[in-house]
Length: 551
Image (cartoon, rainbow, N blue to C red; front, side, top):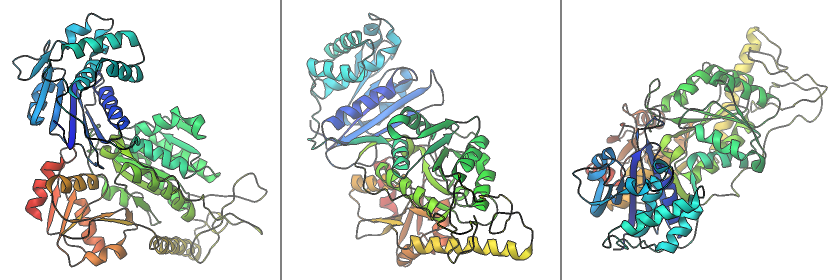
């Protein structure tokens, strides 16, 4: 049967290769010119926890995975129990008959077959790809080419095991599913990889981080590609070290980005306030997971919105943006680096685990990266905090014979500490003027995305936008989706035209933080608020049912 959207789900214990199997399936689909969305779900355990990957593919753009799977491969009892309810109509359950008992579906001796080869526990994931290959009609030679490309270590044993599993698949499953026709291969990236590349496109010199899920893979990706990308990465000993290293590096001219999650961002607040006072340009990636405290480290939520908007103490310009898609993560990161340097103030890219770690086919706007900006000192005596009409002072970096002083204390134009009332007021007013200049500049930018042209209004932001768009497609619903891309300064000038419309807000927080924001800052009163806060992203069909009731 040919499916418009085909979904493959593979589940097993941590360490059994389910994530690699999901990535391999995604690459297989992208290689056929299809659009793909891949979501990894995993517990914060190195061994033994339940992991699964869901890969949905279609011939048209797709912005979410579907939990209703056409093919499920369950490697252990827990995977079978958890996912037997996730079968789509006419879906097929394949399970590891060596460890799953009293099951319905197709049982295969995946463990027994693996034991005829060295390191059998490390080989099970290859078997799941053999099952997928059989189900979509890939023959033995095609399977061998796939395994050679994706599992090069101990390659001959991997090929032999894959062929053994492929041969064990009952004939009725071979070629059961026919994938839709694709057109061209596309980039297949996670949000974090796109953020990393976008930062490089925006002129990144230095990335500093202490690993914290779900931001960690930005550090891993940039560190692995330092030479090709021409950047430096630093794995510091703590988030306190990260933020202070970043402030110091930026003050001598390095375009700097840091990344963390909620707990690390809390530790960075004092350093970010230092950046606000010293007018240090730098970008912080805040990738949200459920909190408070340690929360649920490997899952997704949007509970840090108000925290990101109001971080730090004192009054200074803050820039916060939240991209919706992988492609947007690339372009917005480059744009934020530019804005931070243009206005000499810290910026925050707010995202979530769902965008950070999900992988989707995309096309990057490689020509969208702005030119590196920053008003450089030209001539005359240098004053780091020179009072200007727009509040933006010239920059000068060592080596130079001029005094270059960045200060955490209130200061005069040259950066010398002051407690004089007039000087304090002058610098406070300078930062206010800068914020006004920032707002004026942003009014000439794209700060809000609007999808659709008729129907009621759905307001959402961040990765939840992807879920909403796919839900409308899955449910055959008509609506106008409005996504504020920038959240601080809040683009009220774009949103005021929706003030008299019927509005539904969709977000992933328990207290409706985004609904509160659009009401207080945009003057928009939602008729309904749809929320989900169990750590999992919306499923398109379930969200469509909720929206149908609201709209």
